[in-house]
Image (cartoon, rainbow over all chains, first blue to last red; front, side, top):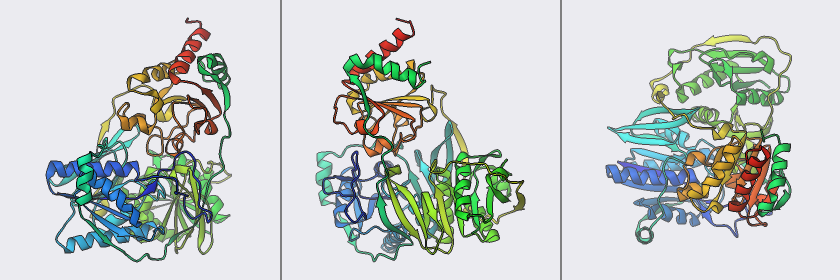
Length: 255
Length: 319
């Protein structure tokens, strides 16, 4: 089976988010980059499915030229090739993002590659719009299951599990289908050194789509006011224990 | 302006996020009528939350959850009401249903809003990074689709009579019913659930190993609480993902949260914003967690945590 997995390059934000002076983006000069934990699990799942069923795992991103790093990371753990929809770094809104992915999937189909499964993270780490996977499914006329923490494929059908209350709901859908997943679906492997070297030689097909006018238009970003300031330090080491217990009593958690 | 609110309910009991969405919608509607949509049956008590008209979508297929089928009911209710905005709670289900609605109508959707202002275009403030950052945005659309960040607005009762009830049967296609809940896997009954615990004691990278969690487990048990962990711990394989507190883990709202050996990254803090109080234990006095907590102890958690447990036992006279 052929699996397409979509990822988004995002900064590793650390403990405090600092914005650029124009408040249009996070200041990333001193930050590394990654993808959402949900997407790490999506990549791992795509690779596992192809290991089990054969076929090809293809990783796609819409992002700046530097996002090739995230495509290489995915290929280092086993994705076979990559599609890079190159942007100038401007954000794309969810409708535009979905449309660009749909166009890329249709171009693949025109060249003879049909994806049995399209995997997304349930929501991106940064914008968190919760909708790109669903939009892609509708545009391609495919069924979509979201928020999965369990996924298996058998006899041309997808079986997905999603947490609900004290247990999990089970969903089924015929392939081809779209699924969005959550961290916890699997434990992603670390890339090996040979894997990283192989990834450098795997193909990345880059195109530069035109960005449509956003309909959800970002005006500016705002760092919310801190809910807490400096903690009251109750003490150091084991000697702090009596004051901690006193605090627990005051907080009413010491029955 | 008229607003339509999608009300999620469990056997007629409206979800708290839906009551919050109703409070949000009343402010947005500024005096104009608020309509509600529910599928299956009538949720109770919506008059007291300002609903003038309740639209109930009835269909044999609503016995099991099918997101596209719920979205179709939203689309048809929206045609009946012609609202300026459709609003739902910004939990997993609300965001899922509204994503389907947005895809069906090819309209933009602003998810997880904390504020909104009508206009052309409408202005919204929505959360990014699980609440660590806010975005101010414009929504260019003839019909505004919004979900409301949980706990951004408190549910509030108003003087209201019984809503008028209008029932309708949406036209569901095969595609609307292609994906639905077909089964259930019950989890093995465990201890205190992380999401509902009054006290959560978490360990981070500083715990050092899976075995190192024994001291965390001991303190959690003494406090009748649950054990949590940071993402670094689940990636290392020391604890299952079900224990992870964070943006991509469990969101908790205990009376007291005790993060031990956790630095305070946004990924983690997005999961414990709901905690009433935070007591951080960390060996690094410069760790960001001390700026994000109410109380702190500087020291090696492997010394501090057992000492606290011993002190609790002493206080209880157990020796």
